[in-house]
Image (cartoon, rainbow, N blue to C red; front, side, top):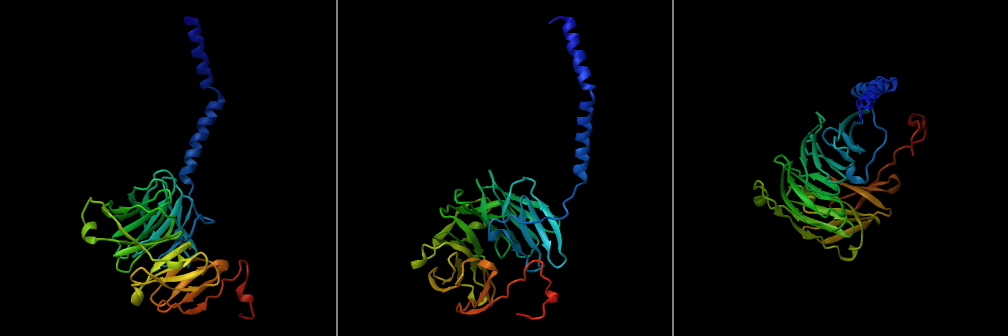
Length: 326
């Protein structure tokens, strides 16, 4: 190339860089960056929970937590005010749960190499990141003593992990081949139960082994004895509380409330007469969330039916104008 041709190319490049369109692009990029620094999220409309494992309530404060994409919404229903936790990985949050003291919330996510993350509720910052899953996290739970977190992967993930989250250590793990949709810890944190498609399994923690630092041990699991109900989809599970601490309660998508005894035997069940999706157990009550907004209450002692809760009023209805309470 001649010197004259080289000079012509340089002059063309200089003229191009001086063009108004280039200056406009630079200014718009700067303005966009400044605008991004000023934009804040005020309110989230909607929820992206894939199931009952992505909605949690802190019984101490009444705070609700649920996902909206890669954001955890913390809702104070008394004040109708939201706060938000942002997942900087931009991965969709699939499950979450509060710690027993309500100070932390643990989340699981989907996508390549998903993490189990622990967040400070008051500061809205991440304080732990636990990575051993490959495809997605189906459900998470804190142990009642607050020491451990259990995370169960998607069906193709085929793994259940127990973490000492404060030390960032995987203390126990094992494979699980079934689709798992729910997990619940026992009152004394000695075992937890997973439930899913034709699956109820009891997993036992050996505290003498799990207390060892930096040592992952095989997690010992024993299947529940399902008998004639073995072909059901168990949509939720809750370990008993108080006097019924040795019992474990499950519901099926077909509408059965089941009780397992301390020998893992399914020895009692009652019909809900409606399909069921979620379960909550206290010392005195079992609440079953069912289709069409129905909530039914049973006794944990003998599974006797107690009542059906009134349904919430329809959206847009002014309840103060109602004259006849029915």
